[in-house]
Length: 359
Image (cartoon, rainbow, N blue to C red):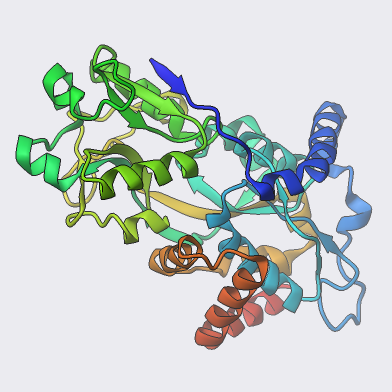
């Protein structure tokens, strides 16, 4: 059973509502058009011979989800594109399935937060390799799975998710008084929600575990408050995310293992056992910059940039922690990106040099 908790949209999401509706309309219109992916060829034309920079006169539209934790990665790519001479518009925000469709159809240029295999279904449905470019790993080795507080785990010997088939253990994580564990899970449209719903059934937990959905950041804020009050917590989590710097795996919380690998859809049959021999129910993911394939063909410098950019997961987590600590204004994100570039100037300049050599 999935319980959806309705929470109000963020101020940031409201601010982008009008532009989001325009882009949604463009996605719907373009998706129905013949040759939609080639509809913006005039805007995609490569720089004229003699231009100092390959992006001169070319406009780029980034797109991302409403998660503030994706701003840093997206803005870093935007800054690199600007160094190549591209005119980069402010990003638009959509849900992940529509992000992939928008990029595939040319209504947006790129996304910097595509997870593979987590978003494999969205990638395939949007046209896959025929319409999208996905080369080079932007951030490698992202983990995700189920977590509980270490105090409860140690007190009751809980190490595996399927132990919650025991009603007495499940009741420890009951929030709403129905006797079932409330598993705080990912938002609808993220990709992970299909895995959670599938695994609750696959592991025989329907009778003792409720999958609680809503606004994940708001639900996690409540989860953190419950933890600080000394109450048991059960939630889906991933890295990189600020939460792992507050509720630290192995210290305040632990990963729960699953009894066997079981994934839905295009990931069916995937072995989710990690290199350390443990199985948290999800394979390790790599984060990619995904762009419109036709646009990349016309803009080889940008294509090479997307391929060679790579940042450590821990750098993303550290920036996300700054967000959580209150440094979340646009000026803060700009400062974080500028500081990262300054601290890694040689790496950043190397990306630009490789991109310029590919034009």
